[in-house]
Figure 1 (spheres, rainbow, N blue to C red):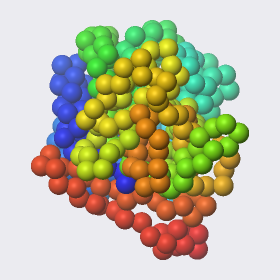
Figure 2 (cartoon, rainbow, N blue to C red):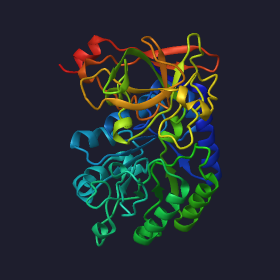
Figure 3 (cartoon, one colour):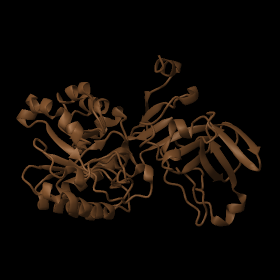
Figure 4 (cartoon, helix red, strand yellow):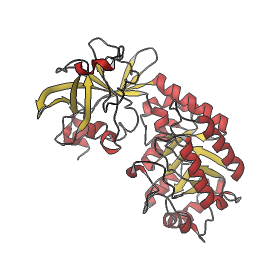
Length: 406
């Protein structure tokens, strides 16, 4: 079961609202990271809208968030453009060829003529700050964003905004260095009267305890004053981080080549793919019989060890001196993929069939990426309300698997 804490979501969006108000900018939910729309009524009041990665996400925002919609996609087709023109508020393009292809159609639309619809370009400042190439849109030959040399001499009539998204799970000093590159290469455009908004994208870990929100506030204020533009932020992970868990059951325990293995009823590749793609290592807890199902606090990480200590979330203090008494298991999923492995974790006792394990921080970039690979059962999705009530908002069945293939 994916279990999402409404109280934790509200805590995060309160931080985002306070930060955005102090900076004088707009903040929207990036649905690519979290799009469980049943939770939207509990967070929409603190956010200015949603950003969408294409038509379907934009429609989801229109139908269930009902606020400002910022849309960007690497490419659109004619049918998508025709639909988006009727309801999105920002429509950002990835290339000049896409903009030139559709701009005459856009220029004739009543919402564009009235100013209700604004258009922009995604830019590539060619300034890498991350450590994971698959998430770096500034690598040489990137398909995401327009470089400064591509814009030289181009006819930009009709455009109102520039949009960059170069961060991923990063602090505000990375934004600071990125803004210097943006100013160097695109500042002349932003200083012109034509451009009225600057979208700084997502990847800002604003709700993390260590995040320097003061620096972010200063950077946004400076950009607003320097360019006289409206600034937009698109956090996804910062909205949903530390708000949900994935509860799993141990289906089998055995040994192979000196390794203890535990097969679970959830899959890394099907249910938490960032464990493999990012790669990302979640904290894991062994929930004893009768334990509360609330999302636990982060586990203790043993100094100098490569694994996270798992345990009952009500009693996590296992001293390092007890390390010899821990039992290490390789946790894997029920699919046929050999690499469907979460990782090696140590527990204070041996695992047995039927044990419940809780994977922390499973609200963002999990449900939006899940699959039914191998016909593995998809976990239900539930909301944990502040009064302790658990509301199951989606259960999956064989028909969901069968119908998506025919």
